[in-house]
Image 1 (cartoon, rainbow, N blue to C red):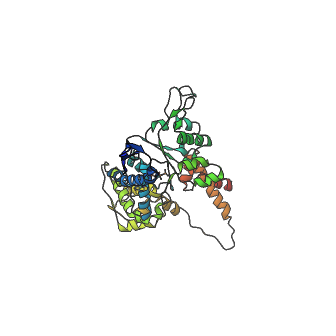
Image 2 (image 1 turned 180 degrees about the vertical axis):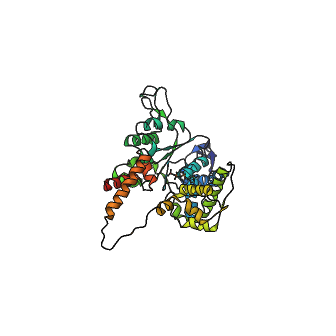
Image 3 (image 1 turned 90 degrees about the horizontal axis):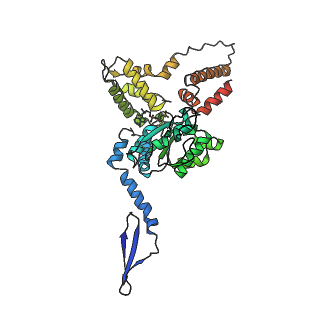
Length: 381
Ligand SMILES: Nc1ncnc2c1ncn2[C@@H]1O[C@H](COP(=O)(O)OP(=O)(O)OP(=O)(O)O)[C@@H](O)[C@H]1O
């Protein structure tokens, strides 16, 4: 009779099989089944799922309000991704919580003891982006008076959150691809490359797939980044979150201003919450946060009412400042030209205050991306 026994090796899946018989005693044997291929996926799924419910993971996500079915589903996926160490792409409009979600993934995962570094690729000065991301060696350019570690090296063992990844120039896209593919970077001016072990979580409010089609974003980089994809819904698409988000943000705003000598903790009425629910919030949770901060600061009411929120809304103020339009029946008014001139004025003002950063100016004007801003500018000139 032949008995087969399984001996577990160092890893969970390293198995050796022995068979014993009177004739041959005990000998190493092979089985016509690839156990590791069959059970590895099941075991891995079990590990990821049990990890996804651990206290460490729950703590990492505790501050994220997620009551709506869309957000619950998203957070469940994010918890699984946290332990997978896969490159992750977080999509969502401005202010929806892309950085907060990425931080939670980092803190829930196995890299949590190492740094979380964040970079806004849209705000990187063209001439320094290479050095900021990948570092430089002394003397590589004017002002490089000592060796400098880039963010990739600073995030060693941890996570690099690359916000507005669609803004990276073609040459930096190539270097990022190499860092992801080979795990290697080269400092500016260096002849040797260095190994890096960094998880990249990229984020964007842009349509990267469209950018791939337009030829402005590398297809190979897109597929490298878009392994785990998480799309955060806009605030107006998750009304079930608005009340708890409002309460959570209000609590944090109260905490922030609590050191002020005249501080009085504020609450919000149901009427105030209903008003918040009716707004479209193009700036999402960040806009809600800023609006509530202004309302807490300016209102004399201990319980914030709808009119307090209305008064604190920037967009409402803008609308209120428009004069009423009066036109007579025989009058002609060139509305397209008027709209063009409004567009041009606002874009120029935004570019000026954002020091010519098209991405920031587009964000300021609640446009989808810098390309929309460029198109509008071209059309209105
Ligand atoms: N689900 C949430 N629960 C509680 N607070 C949130 C949530 N999502 C976002 N916030 C808060 O909203 C603000 C904006 O979030 P965050 O900076 O992560 O957005 P973002 O999408 O990365 O913005 P941007 O596109 O401008 O970079 C932060 O103050 C954050 O703490």
